Amino acid sequence: MNSIELMIDEHTHIIRMLGVVRKASYQVMQGDPINYEDFDKMIDFIANYADVHHHGKEEKFLFKEMVDHLGKMGSNLISHGMLVEHDWGRLFIAELKAALIRVQAGDDESRLDVIANAIGYASHLARHIAKEDTVVYPFAEKQLAPEILAQINAQTATFEAEAEQQGIPAYYLNLLAELESKYLLAP
Image 1: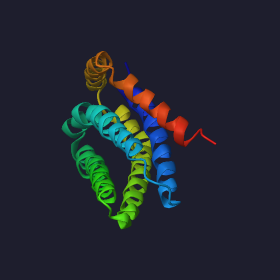
Image 2: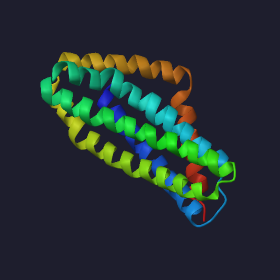
Image 3: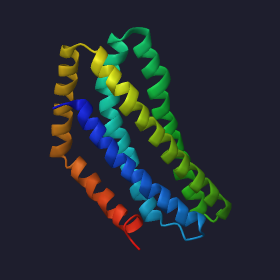
C-alpha cells in the first residue's frame, strides 16, 4: 500500500462532498428550508471520514514522522501549518453545528451562520487539500527515508484493514453517493 496515494484518493472523495456542502448552502441562501437530516449526514462525513479517518492517518503516521525526521522545516510545515489548518476546519464544523441548532430553535438570522461556516469550511478545506497534494505529500516522499515511508505504509495498511472490517470507507462512500445524487445530480 502506498499511503500517500491512498490519501490523495481520499481527497477526491472529500472534494466531492465539498461540492455537496456548497450546493446545500446555495439552497439555504435561496431561502429553501434547511434539510437538517442532510446537513447531519454532511457533518457526519466531514467529522468521521475526512477528519477521523483521513486526518487520523495523516496526524498519527505521516505528519508525526515528518515532524520527527525532517527538522525545523518539517516541524514548521506540519505543526504551524497543516495541524493548525485541521483545527481551523474543526472550528468551522463546530460553528456550523451550533448555527444549525440556533436555526432549529427559531433564530432565522443564524441561517447566515450556517451558510458562512459551511462555505468557509468548503473553501478552506479545498485550499488545504491542494497544499497537501502539491507541497506536503511530495515533500514527504522526497525527504523521508525509504524505511520511514515503508513504516508509514505498513501503519496505514493496518489502519485501513481495521476501518474496512468496520465498514467505515464503504459506509461513507455510499453516504457521499446518496448526497451527490440529491444535490449534484438532481435536476
